[in-house]
Image (cartoon, rainbow, N blue to C red; front, side, top):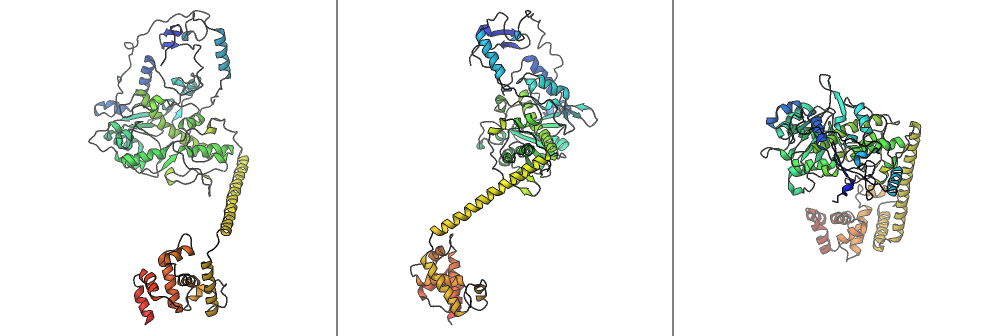
Length: 572
């Protein structure tokens, strides 16, 4: 990593060392995801904020390891000893608004300044929604915190969506933040599931694991952290730290995951469920892939039905569009070691991921119910059924791409939302195009079959056998060989069927053909050899047809147990 020249450095009392943009630096892209670096006072504030949301009962039971102290003091009321207040540095009058980023006497190249200004003016500006997201649950985003996040500098810690922005009533009616339960033991996880989550109908769900873990690394590295969220609470089950003498699966958690009546929501949720099944023996049911619901709602509103498929959409994309703030997805946190005790950044990151699922599902369901016609909610993901555009209309959709990145068109601006009448017309047009495509494929298949019939000439031996069988039936017991019922009635009258006579003639007149060869000539894929032997046996028995005894005995009689006794009785 390179460092900036000394003349671009300045010390600021609250921000530490700051860097001003030099000639070699390009402008920072708008809302670019990058690791967040907290200064010491800011980290202390975030620690206080998190501890205020942790389970109070768990704080009182630290000796039982219900909640980890995260490597910081449990009480941070007086931080003056750690972070003393520094004297303010006077700033020269008339300096630029960014005087705290560079010294006032730093020389600035006019050409460089003009280039930076032009690049800034030509940057794409992403407009933030002005309204709060729809309050679909009792826990709602605080308007004051929402406005503050909107006003924060893009990419700064305060600009991102997170669970700490929400407020809602507790059992006594007091307004509070969502409570975070960080559990390091199976006993604590079981208590939390029993007390707070087993009666919920919808839960956010996510997993974290060690990035370089292989299948042989064991469950603690492959399912290091389990996140579950309801509107009022978030549970972090740190499986990697569970006692080695304990089973890793809390019984109530297993029951919740295997209950199809409890909907678990998330992105790439089938992949997470596969990890649970492989490493913890949990067969999850009731899985709702948010990408399916997002595509159904988003593209039904705009009439772009061709985009309703099972390709995955990143969680951050869904949050920004429907919860109206960007989501922090720093690679440093995502790829950190989840098998060790969690840092503050890991707690915030993992808790927000699960909590986003609950609010996204409720918000998307609200928008789905406003659609006219209203499409049904997508099936649970484990059922592997198509996404339904309306009741009784299941259209096959693309295969789910578990590792897909943002599709090429996801960065484009969403099209205008259609009126109900326009949406109906668009849906009908989409159905007509689907029918036309199906008809075109069917027509192509019919033409291909005709071409194949014309190219592949029938074997002359088969044609000769069919001609003989038809003539035999006509001469002996059927007035009209073309009559559909003639061959079906033949058995009732004590005569062989057409298919039996055809197989007999083909085998009897062609000494080089075995019963297996006859089976291949009569059909592709071939008939069973025993089926052909049955045909020949019935024809010989019912019509008293001539055969070579030794060949007939070897290839027909001996192929089926009990047939030799029937043959001997027929000769008697």
